[in-house]
Length: 385
Image (cartoon, rainbow, N blue to C red; front, side, top):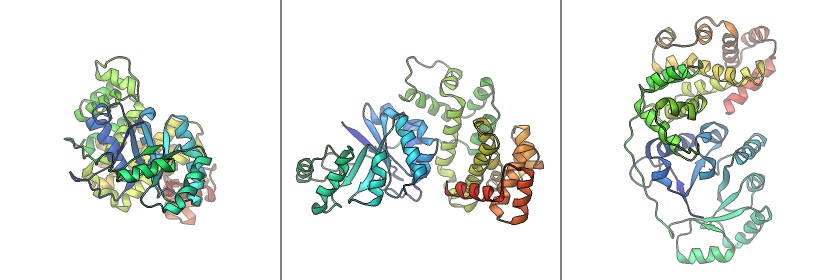
């Protein structure tokens, strides 16, 4: 089985300046599918993509066709029950999971083994006297052994004798840096698109909005051209592409592009951006408690959380954001008047962020489904996410 590992590089040299693993993965996915296309990059081969906890738990991975990719779990990921459940879910969808940079038997390795398919052993870093024990442990769980950093013919021979099944390293190929010309989507246009998607638009409305972002249309067509959708025919119109991709997938793609846009990398180091993401997640979780099983309402609550802070990121008043974008009336009431169910959830989010007793108590009185402890736990869950 031949495959390529796909890594983020910040320039034309084979060197990565990665300060955020999730951002690096978003860049890889956005450029791989949106800019270059799977056919041009991978051909018929399998792709290995590094993922951290945030990416694994997000909808970003759903943009990848499972049969074409192995998700490579970074060594920095901490294992727990939530991640165990997510790993099993990803495997049910068809993804294969690999555990990266293993060099010894450890509690982390033993925890991950039941929910991965491939174990990548660092052939240079693993002491030879410990290699047999490590290989034996992996084999007992029926996992595929991959030797990485195989640099010489001698390394290859030794790895084969040791019982490895897959091999990776400079002995086989040197890294190749792929570049593409990239026109960043306007963040204003992406924001307008996300506003529209939050309000269950008609296809004709979405078609009009997408026509204002030509490069996003190209990226959507490349997404369709990947085997993720297993198309048996060609696409003849933008409307047809929208119907095949689906609005939820377009929403995920637009959010990914907003994250991967190099023009806003500096903003992502701002604590305010982190708060924006945390609040959106809090709103989504809280909405799931007030309306169990209503995914659409949870999505609307999440985007309300984003809109409640995005005006600060853009350096304008919230009234200006609301006035210039066709925001749904329920979201508008929540942002400007704190009215309606979304407004109450937004008050609860701000109360949880403040940690102050009186606002938390008032939020719980307005939403009796919650106790102060519930809000605290939701706040912790959102912050951890």
